[in-house]
Length: 155
Image (cartoon, rainbow, N blue to C red; front, side, top):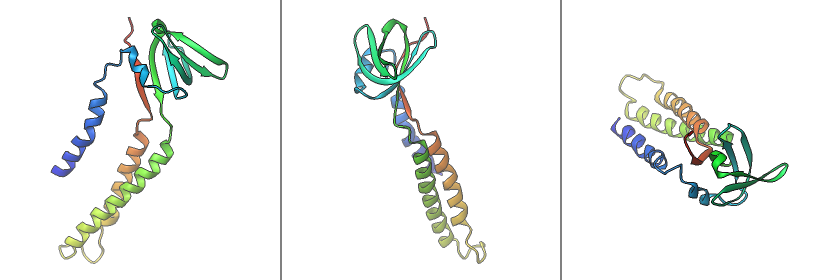
């Protein structure tokens, strides 16, 4: 149980660290590369999705189906980088890894407890495999596929 708690704490550190950056800093847009898919939400809740072109002190430019456009900095509520959306792939990888790790842990428990009341049918491997599959599936579905680069609170 201690090891599980330690693993959760270690895995939570990047999430906590990423939340510390000042999202209201316009210069965060310098981390974007030309051509990356972004979503710009204006203060009036109008959303634009396209590919990042550039930004200046006064505006951000992007291209979409209708060509290159720009939004003034004063009108921008948030800019989100839409990372490659591989949710289905992540789900299958998470489920497979979870099932494998769970089954491995279960097999170890079955082997060590084979003479301690589990009877002739070792059950820990399939149970832990199913538990691992469920956890891995959930993690794969919930993996973050976007990152907020810039965000200001409403005035």
